[in-house]
Length: 389
Image (cartoon, rainbow, N blue to C red; front, side):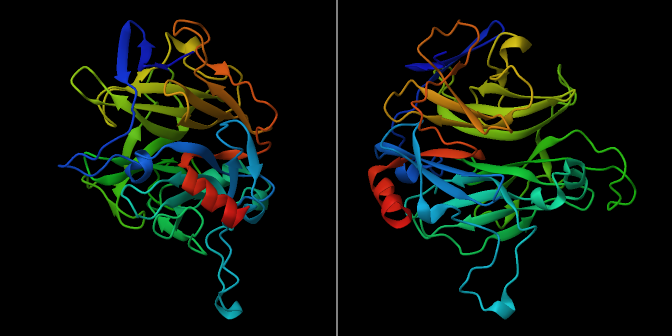
C-alpha cells in the first residue's frame, strides 16, 4: 500500500483523509518548533535503530549501512550502550542500580530545538529476573520510566546512569512503553505510556481484577518535571474498553505526517497494540486535526485494520523513508523472532491487505525488540560510526 503518495490518504469507512506529506519544516514564530526541528531541515542520509534484546535487556544502537532502511550493522561499542547499572566511574561504595536492572522498549526522542539534548525513554522492567511472569510485573511492576539525556546535540554522549521518574500512584500496576512527541501547540513534549490500575480501597492491594490497559499522558519539558492541566492525574489519552473491539491496548507510537489541506490542521498517524480476547495485533489510525483530534482507522473494517493478521505481535515503530518522500516504514515486533518490516509499497491504496511486507536483502537486524528508528544526517552518521563503531 502507498499511504503517502504525494499526499497521505487514509481510507476510513466512507471517509477519506488527505494530508500533505511533510517536506522541510520551518518553526512557526508564535509557538515552539515541531518535533525534531533541530535537524528537520537537514538532509537525512542514514538511520539509527535504538532497541534491546531479550538476552540483555539493555539499550543497544544499530546503524544502517548507508541509506538503507532495512540493512543494519551492530556497533561494537553500543552492545549495549546504556544500562541501568551504575557507571564504572562511580565509586564502588556509592554504586546503586537504578530500578529493576532491566531496560526494555527504548525510544529515542529527538531534540525539539537546535543544540538541545536528545532523550532515551525506556520501560524499567527485568522479565528475565522473574522468569517472564507477566502477571507479576503487571500487578507489581515499576511506577515510573527510565530516562537518559544526551549532551547538547549529541547522539553518542549520554548520561552514565538513567533517572527513574515515577509517574503513577500506588493503585497502578505498572508503567510500560513510554514514548514522546513534540506538541507545537503546547510547546512541550507529549509523554505517553501504557498502564492499568486497581480499584480497591487499599491502593497497594493489587490482588483483584485490574482495569483494561490504557494509554495515559502528561506534558513535560525535560522528562523529569511533568505537567497536567487536569487534577485527575494521570490523564487517559486512549481507551478502547468502550469501543467496538473493546479490550486493552499498549505500545502507542505517534508521528507527525504533514498538513491537512482541509482547515490546515496537523496530521498524525498512530499505531498501537490492541489486546482483545488474547489476540495481540497492531492497528493504525490517522487524525487530520492534531494530536487530540478524531483518529480514524486506516482500513475499511476490522479485517483491514491490522498490519499482521496473526496473533502475538506488538511494539510498532513508524518512520519516513529518506529517499522516497511518499514512502513510510512500519515494523511490528513478532515477539518470538523480533521485528517484521512492512512498508507502504508500490501498490494502489485500495489494494487489500493494506500493508506489504518489506523486501529485505538479508541485512535486517535479528532478535531486536521494541524500540525506534530515526532518520539521521550524514554528520550524525559519521559521529556515531566514529565514536561507537
